[in-house]
Length: 146
Image (cartoon, rainbow, N blue to C red; front, top):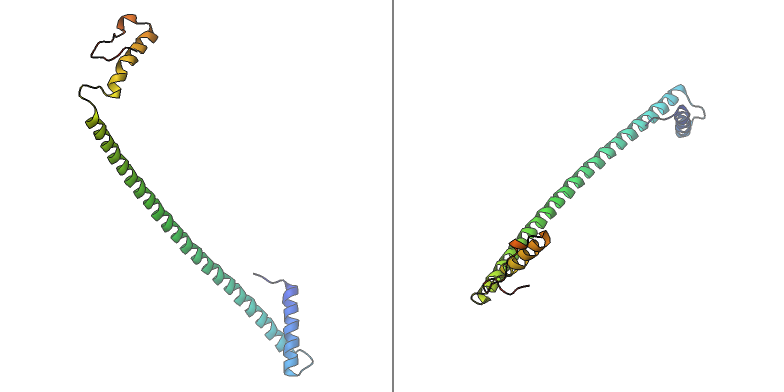
């Protein structure tokens, strides 16, 4: 921060007037003007140092806040990942249990849904491609005809 000549002059005049009043002297001597200039320059230097210290402190506070935000985000990401894993594991277990239950409750000799779809899909494919020779025919083991 730099002060213009006019501002420094004004500060010097005000400080000189104050010093002259305090000394009980109506005129400002060369020594008191020099002292006023020195005081103004010292005040400017202190102000510059104070601003720099404030900037440094603000940067340190911001850096710490960024570190904390990063740590919070990493922790949240880890928790989300852990939840996804736990949910996927639970879904797999429930799916396996449902498949086991469905398999246990299927009557002997009954075909699975995949097996039941095989014949109609094969017939549709043969019909769509015009290959009437490859079209399978239903048999008692293949299930009902479509």
